[in-house]
Image (cartoon, rainbow, N blue to C red; front, side):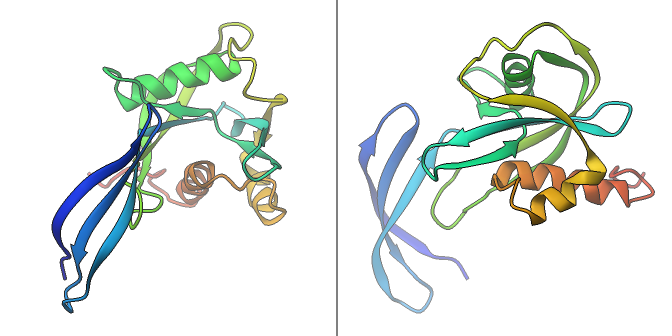
Length: 184
């Protein structure tokens, strides 16, 4: 059942966030104004080494005043592909460069209120290129065994939606005899 859009108008805008007001009609005929948040798309990099460890950042999020582990991530810039953004963010935030990158999972975290796309990539064949150049992202950076991730999620040490989607997909792939690859 499809909702009908009768009109839309932007009520706030800046380079990171745009707020729109839509005049919508539900399939049952109920019509009302619905707020929509339009955000730039997010690129995320899950770097996995040969020992099945993932590189995580321990960081504070002031909005929720919480500390937690996250994958490197950031906004996709104009003219940049999500994969390019994920590699750039990984290098800036960790000092590591993935040599092989493939899409891991795609998500739309709150499609009822926002249009943001989260593109999560798997990075392998890693090279240390130096210290992180982005100094405001993490208190520390650590290689964490993938086998430890489930317990960390249960303890709420990993709470970021994009990080959860990426890491839980990696864990699902671990149990898949195809290694998460589509059948041929």
